[in-house]
Image (cartoon, rainbow, N blue to C red; front, side):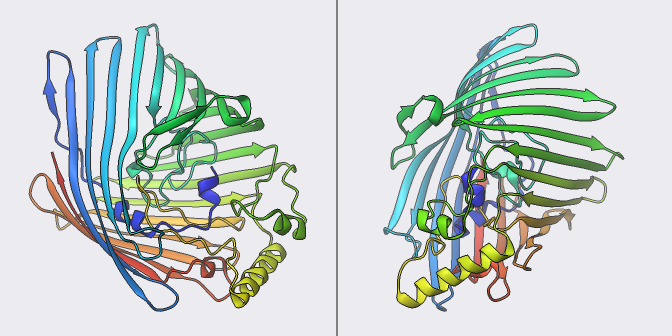
Length: 419
């Protein structure tokens, strides 16, 4: 969850924000129920920072997933990605390469609605699109296209599912990762683990769930709801009550929290309300959401943080907010959430001249007008290849939240071949 509250803008991750084409080509081997899929992707991109300098970089990714079902009750699946990332200018080092485990899990389903899963897998809880406050297990979703974030969490999970009810129990330890992205150390104590439970039910044509999470010895309770009010329009909401108020700047010096008189032991609330409209005949996909972060900075506290950042910049001292990093192995652009109230919107036209897809998204800080806009366009080239262009543009008033990010814009291209 802390990733959602960081000031870091992963500009290179914007390369994954274009809408994916339907489903990658799959090959089946009937004898053991084997399914394979993947893609090869090249992504050149460029960006400009506040000093006027421009930077170029590139990213190459080979992703492959394999799933096998040797028996009716057993499923084995992996999703690996080889990522080569060129020098990104502002990031330390001259480039990086990683062989990543997005997912790798074994599931046993003996029947009667029961299943047990062990490994790394994304178990998305919550009803939101741009964010999911009640989902404390997985990396935060991409604010424009959450379905493209493939990385899961290391879990031991059990589920019992019936016609309208389901019960989930999950344990997730902290797993260190080596520089290449592979696991390198396990921390399984109560202060370093997540224990979560969820009860979900469908009633009165509404999907409801109640969630309780013990997150590293902190208690959270949540409620989610989603309902189609027409065939094309869905309304959804989430509410999360926490027993603490995490400071929205990760790794902030204790002196800063004392100066702001921040009480991290006070309870706080996070909430999300939204609507999703999809009309397949028109090819129109629209999402609108409003988020509230109770632990975010008030106007007075934000002004004081801004003064400290400006003072540190004048003195040539690195400020805690001057941490723009570019890149991100598994995608998912993270926009800062220092304040308390945000609006997110996305419009997609997925049948633009048949083989084209046109989209635009925006995230707006409702307290100071900080805005990031993401336009994109994609062209299908044959049955298994797509080419896309897009940009990330920050439109922030002076002394507003997004003005703290030393980025003016980022642009990219993306060529993807599926197999």
